[in-house]
Image (cartoon, rainbow over all chains, first blue to last red; front, side):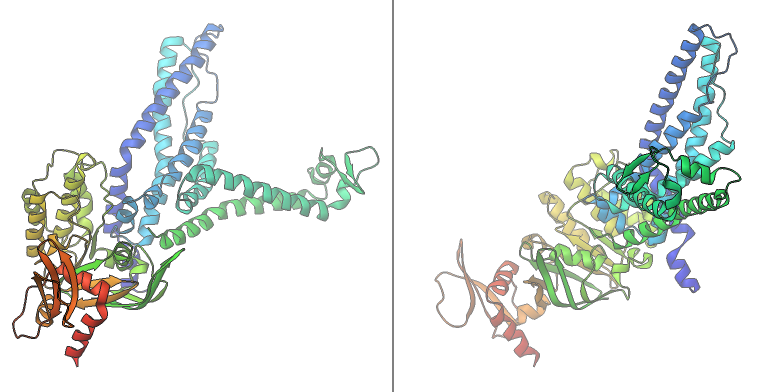
Length: 281
Length: 280
């Protein structure tokens, strides 16, 4: 690609303008949602602290997971809903015309939406959760003498959750550009159907590939004709337990599955990018 | 500037264009006329890259609009009939959108807003349909895009706004600009659109300048129904009979666009033959 082609595909000036436009269009709704969630965080943690205090917990007690559970709910559920709305403007009368005609390349428009819903949303949730948890913690300790611990955005568990969010979020970004209406619901349904299909295919493959480990003696597991189904997985657990014959294979399978899972994100981005290029209104 | 060759397009249940050819040159305000469902809006959408031609070619400023390249989008402004404005203050909208158009003229924009008497203290989404439309027309004109597409621009405008619109559009068109206006309101656009393009049954059945039309054809109101062969088209009107004839004199006549449109969509063959004869 020559310099002209590269500039046609990406110009920092246009990209910055599109990013600003996106922020200006979406910040109000996001602020309202965040404020509502912050209120929820404070109230829920206050109820928990009150209950702990009333239950006789001594002053200074720190119970709970440091808001990690709440953080995950906000990041995943909130993020998926926000992402599902990302390309809604493409499919609405009037706004679709305005959006597709915006002077910017397909790449710039797609990356702006991706950045806003994946990186900016995750970063915003981390900052917001740290602030809301700090405020909530201070209040709880002041009022009830007990708390849940401060939210630490730098733990490995938080970073792992962010990585998982970015991968899973890519499905919802694809769903947002793929489905004209009810993108969130349709994406969830699609993931469920896809998950069931994968489970069936891999189950059958496993049953065939490791047939001898399913077949147990009489009286064990469920039988259908000449086939035995070990619903407890005892045979397989035996095969894959640490140090057993299949443990290295299981480890390799787990690594491959993780790699495949992470690779689904760029695959979804590519599919979404091309779908946006084909969008017509 | 715009060159469409042998272009075909259809929706799932309806074939719209089949072998459509069209060439538009800069420095003109083209009027695109056609019956309901003839495909005027779709043609504007194909030119602006919102729809993709299924066969044939479409070139706009040297680009394929279906690919929606940024360099082309910077040069196209499409004021659609279905308006969309975000819930932003006018100043904020301009601050965000204007920099995306390299030749945006802020002084002209302020002047257009003043001319249209648009309230700038409300959010755009709170304006009336007519006000929104005037705002977007002002923005489109000020963008100085080389291609300005307008779909029914006078729909929803009050009487003074229509006059203001005509005045602004007449003054805004540059020598390097193509303005293509799709309209049913030919009376609103008279003395403004030239040349005239008529779209019917998936093809361009007529594309001529008003000067050429006035030289070749003559429209008149006659008190009795003409029975002679020379009447190319006859229709009953309030004041008598609107008649279209070949202009055999040397003087250019003033053309009634409604009569011309009705003649072309009803008995276009005879009218076209006159122009084809003149081309020989």
